[in-house]
Length: 72
Image 1: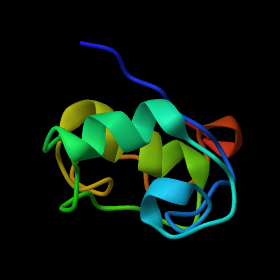
Image 2: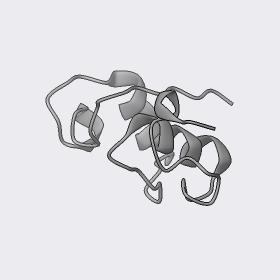
Image 3: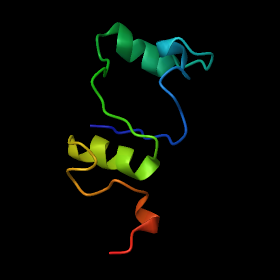
């Protein structure tokens, strides 16, 4: 499994989802039927990473804020 995580990039950024940035590799994967449409995102990077890596809601895994700001 290969996981590519980009911060500050919206779903509509790449060509495969209607954006203006060419993405031939992602286009090829989408043509083969590989698309992810049921992913939970947040407005912050750390909770979104937690949701992606665990497959659960970010609050369930205790990352409702940016982890660098956590106080323990």
